[in-house]
Length: 102
Image (cartoon, rainbow, N blue to C red):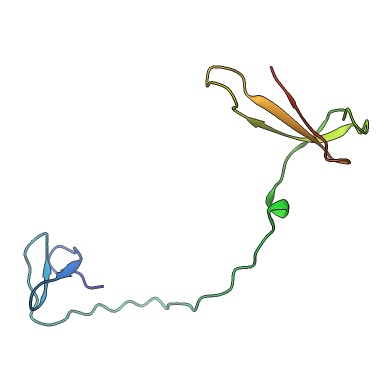
């Protein structure tokens, strides 16, 4: 990528040479700008499963299925914006999910 030495805009390809669309600068040859930054090689990004990325707070809420007293919870706005959001719970033991409206 080449930049205009006058205004700093990106130079675009014209018929015979490169030129600036902003200030009408025209170059006779190619302009090369060197940077001191090293470009690192692409490295592999480890994949993380969806289950490992979900982190929810745990509260004291009794499960109706297994009677466990601990559950994860999260809230979602399921109705219009002026109404209360819906609170969802998921049992930490049997993973039964239920919701609570306010």
